[in-house]
Length: 379
Image 1 (cartoon, rainbow, N blue to C red):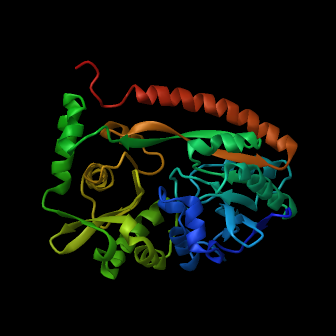
Image 2 (image 1 turned 90 degrees about the horizontal axis):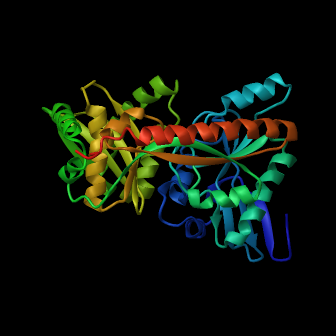
C-alpha cells in the first residue's frame, strides 16, 4: 500500500531496520519490543527457519525511508509459544474444511508480557498499519492475524479497525509505596504474613541468593541457567523455545535490563530465575532448577521479584502467564488483552460469539479472584 508520502511494506526481519528508529517508536518502557530483544531472537535462531516463527515485521516508511510505524509480526505454522490459546479455533476450522495455519502473529515471541504492539510515531497511522496486516494475510492466504498481550491503551485502536478483543487473566504484584518487603507484609492478613515468612525462611535455608545484572552475568552463569531452562522447557513444552545462544545475545545486547537471580548451595548454582526490567515494571520470564527445594520457586520468582521492584521503585511485577498460586502471595488478578482478525466471514462470526461469552466469564472470574486476595479486610 503506497501514497505519495508513505509506504506500507513487509520485511524479512526486525534486524533489517535501524535500531535507533525502531526503538524511537517502541519507547523504553517495555524491553520485549526493543530492537535488541527481537533481533536476539532472530540472530540466535530462536525464531526463523524451522521454528514455526518466521519474522514478518510490517512497517510504514516515509519517502526518505524513515521508519514511521511498525508491527513486530511473525508468520506462524503452529500455536506454540503464544500463551493465548487458539488450538480449539484451529481444530474447528480444520473440521470445517479450512486451513488455519499459517497465520500472522503480532507479538513479542514466547513472552506473555503486556506491551505496545502498534509502534507508532503518530496514532493516525494505526489504521494503515492494521490494514497492512490484513493485506498481508489476504495476499499470502493466511487465515487470520492475532495481536497478543496488547497494552490496554492500544486496544481501542484495534477495536476501531474491527479487530475482535479477547480477555484473559494474569496475576501482577503492585507496589503501593512500600519501602521494604516487611511493609508489603504489613498489608496482608496476619495468617498470610506468617505463611509468607515461613515460606521464605524454608526456601533459603542453607542457600545463598545472588542477583546479577549487566557485566556481572558471565557465560558460566548462562551455562548454569541454560540447564535450568532446559529442564523446565522439557517439562512444560516438550522442547525449549530459546536456543543457548539467545541467552548470550540477550546478555550482550541488553544486560543492563536483565536481573538473573541464582540460588547457590555452596559454590554450586541449583536454581535460577530470569527477569527483565522496564521503566515501571519487572517482568519474570524463566525459571528452573536442578534440585527441588520446597518453596524455592516462590522465593526466586515471586518474593525476590518483589524485593527488586521495591528496591528499584518499580510500580509492579508481572510474573508470567497463569498461576493461581500467585494469588496467595500478594499477586492480584489483572485482565490482559489480545485482538484478532479473521479473513473468513463465517468463521469470524463464530469466533466473535465465542469471545463475547468468554469475556463475560473472564470478568466474573476476575471479580471472584479479586475477593480472594490475602490483603487485610477489616482485620
